[in-house]
Length: 459
View (cartoon, helix red, strand yellow):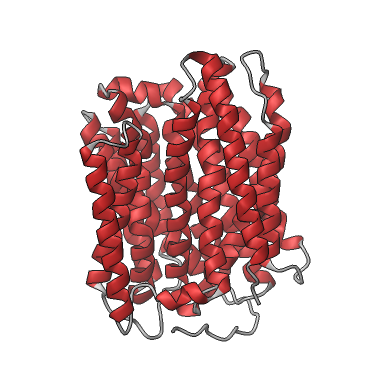
């Protein structure tokens, strides 16, 4: 079992500004790109002549690339250089964004979004790994991981707003040109970063990498496709393939001397908390939040831009809360703070219950604000746990594992919320009723995650 590296003495090495700003900017761009299609889905579907099933993939295909690549690319970055993999990610993001911008049909666009997801995985996993390699454990790292976590909320806020504004200005394709353009200076700025890698590279675990990536990819694809019918033969085959591949991954890693993912880490409370906390965040928070814009548009009659601005209350407060998390007393353990964040998120979801067709947008604001505080606190603690729960030289792998759980949970959460919210019947009244049930279920899941986080004792 891999032992945790001893904490280094607190210091602030040279180059810390770039080592914080560049990963933070990359995370912001990745999350903006993740949420951007929410604002222009109807225009995008119309421009690509996409039907109902294709529209699900237009929204969810990036999750497939993200979840499948995060842990693998994080492990590769630890061995072969975090800056190198980060630079490759910026290039791939630029190329795939151009492919989305010029896509003639839904298939090309969906393929481009899957590749965008893999590129975003490189930015997310290596960015947090670069921060961990630069900032020693202590207040400096707590501040840096808080900033990184804050970018998650800010990206969720700005993505739909920017995409909607650009769609109104020059069409839905303009966002993808903007994403490609933003990738270029990001890559140039990354050249200023100091290269970092594990002192003892583990080598390429090709069987582990393939079985994990293909297994998670099959699972996310099954969840996404399952929204059109869970009993379809193709969906059942994908679930079966995912089960076989992930079981093969566990068998391969258990026998390998230097595995891609040390399974012994799951016996460490801090690592287990990092994974379960991220999974619950995806299931109970991201799932319902991703659906709120559609609820506001159909139930309240808000425009796409207005819905995005109301949702920005949640993500904007989340941004501020994550930045301020570093001011909390250092004696407070990250697990307890994570539990507090999840409790606040659940409380905010409960406060939004009671939606109906006569509801006004301000009815959601108190709940969004409370949930935003909880999300910001949880994001900051999860970022801290992701790099603090693994050996120092495996920080990108820890980030990849944490974010894999987050986006796998988000895929399940979006599918479950969508199924519940659209189940009771059609029309605004049916959607409002379904949304209330979905919010209650999400609150229960999030609160259960808070209880679990409080129970798991981290030394």
